[in-house]
Amino acid sequence: MTLLPRPWALLAELTHACPLRCPYCSNPLELTRRSRELSTAEWQKVLRQAADLGVVNTHLSGGEPLLRADLEEIVAEAESSGIHTQLVTSGQGLDAARLDRLLAAGLRSVQLSVQHADPARSDRIAGRRSFPDKERAAALVREAGLPLGVNVVLHRDNLDAVDALVELALSWGADRIELASTQFYGWALRNRAALMPSREQLSRASEAVSRWRERLAGRTELVWVVPDYMDGVAKPCMGGWGAVSLTVTPDGTVLPCHAAATLPDLDPPNVRDWPLAWIWEHSEAFNRYRGDGWMREPCRSCPRRDEDFGGCRCQAFALTGDAARTDPACRLSPDHGLVRAAVAEDAAGAGYVYRGPGRDDQGPAAVRRPG
Ligand code: SF4
Ligand code: FES
Image (cartoon, rainbow, N blue to C red; front, top):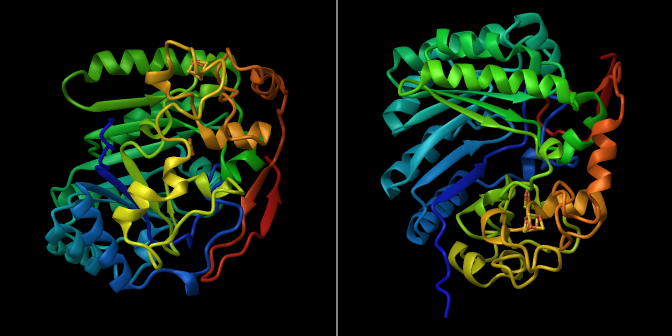
């Protein structure tokens, strides 16, 4: 009998509300309205249940988690339950007083996003002026002595700026730099043509990352997430379905990954109806693609199936309409031509479709701007 794995990480999407309007956002097209968000007490219950289940780390994310006025109470509950908290933020709305309160509550680290090393280009990608706030937020985090991670989502408009982005993150005092290629889910899939880099860009960026890795070895961690569309290798998405982590969305829906709400027949459970332990162990949503019993050929007999778990279920669904097919990013997939065609598409000059302006009750509104 195989023992069920225990989760160690929780992605807590506290709110979908966000002041930024990034075209690469991987949140769903339909955002959860603020009136449907979990209450403070409900989040605190989720954290206690997560700790009982074995979770030791949580990313407090969104949207922009700083928009939750009760963030300090949520952090404090995690800390007292034995869960380390990392705030994943755009830096908007972080001032010294707020950071002091979060520190007092037990916040352990901050991951700050930036869109480009050039302030004007960063603001253009984010869809509003935001770079100065990010710079200020980085300084506050370093002054407070908290570990700082700087995260950049890469695409055709910033992939040529890898050197400048690493220099910027170092000047901000980052302990960890994450350069992560856009994952084409949710809103990002809508902007795929405008965001898709060229192979030449990718190869230049890859050389730059290798140089920086040599220079920074032993000092600063540099994480480089290559685009799976480009290399013909499926990514081991989430470390396997229902294997190491779970995601709780703003309204309490529990998912094996943050994009799983896009699978139309998954019927994911909600913490308002079920304890987290039951959801992890017994829900159909968490068991459907767990392990390898669900796999078809070519994954079923592939020697890599224990390494990449057949790739990403959400990407398989987004591109083929069937989440149980081999991820088309894999060169062995019969659907790999879909990915090759997307990469070959010449989208120079395609404009972004921005998310609607940040407001309390966000809908799926979009605004198109020239690229
Ligand atoms: Fe991975 Fe399946 Fe491709 Fe094999 S066929 S490499 S298991 S995605
Ligand atoms: Fe859902 Fe990859 S994002 S399985």
